[in-house]
Image (cartoon, rainbow, N blue to C red; front, side, top):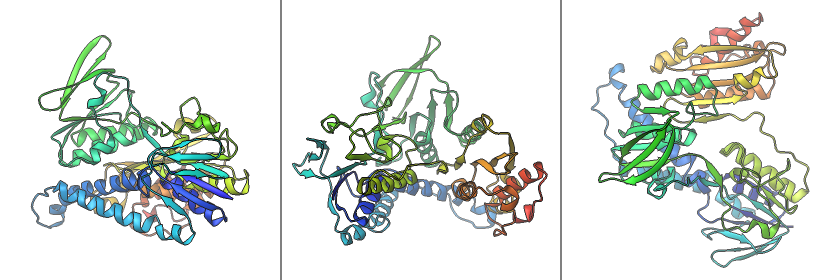
Length: 467
């Protein structure tokens, strides 16, 4: 069997590897570079910049521990060099290019847009013609554009990562995960940030308590957070940058900065692919329509990753790529699921979640909610990172954790432990029998679980001894 995978992000790489492992003659074609957005424009470069921001923050804390240093100064060109080094290292090692060669996968990079010329045939912008029994679409997504006068004057998050110098000021429009990361990183670098969210709260897909805490800490860090600000009328150039004109309830206003970054959502990257030539349909949101087996409306074509919508994150893309390839080669039998999917962001403060929000859990469960503050745990006190909380949602009948929501240092890492606990359907009192290392940041989760066990009148085992 011949398989073509279009796109070389996490979903495409995993799909190609799995198809080849199952014995298919596999070809991978990508418009850009090996590794896709995750390596070249997404989590890897973003996390590198976030790490630099964190190092600058921690350097300012050294005096508290008797280490005398001067005020840290950012060399942004050198930081961008480091980003390129990290990306290159990840492409060479983390994405296992040698495994592709060992499996005989044919890789075509920088071929431009690939379009369908028939149900089983495709042609790239560079003139390469491809044919296969099965095709897997993993083309990812692109930033959403707005039909607003002057929109062409704005930047995307990709442009922000590619700046040659740190701007004096920045408007960030859209306070979801991407906008929050841009705002947090450049605020740490010294840029004056104004963050705008059309809805009533930033991070609208997070638990309400997480949104409120992050907004509070953003403001404390000097970010101007504007929620429910109204609607944008236009953008226009100024002598020093850009102006955003907006209005609310008939009142007009404007703000200015050196540049404006738009982060108002993500759409499927399917422009120019001529999906109709293969019988592939989009859903009502504009993403590729798939069934539970990640099979499109054309039975010989499958899709995975951001191009199908859903949770547009690396772990889910990897899982989707694996399942799409398995079903493409062996026939539709493996269903895609993401019931336990930890999500987090490397902002300052970090935030993360896994499982149900409190509001969602209350729709179908009798729940107990417990909260542990970071300032109650030994490790956070030692490190001087005492801001934040861990919120746990537990089922009163099964004693199992339904959801965990965290704001604070290493929140993303803590959420991984909670995810394993939820996946294993572990009762809270059983979790407390595990002698976890002390002192660690996981102690805040232990304290929240211990509070839940006490609230449910269960024996708590080691309990707070692990915190």
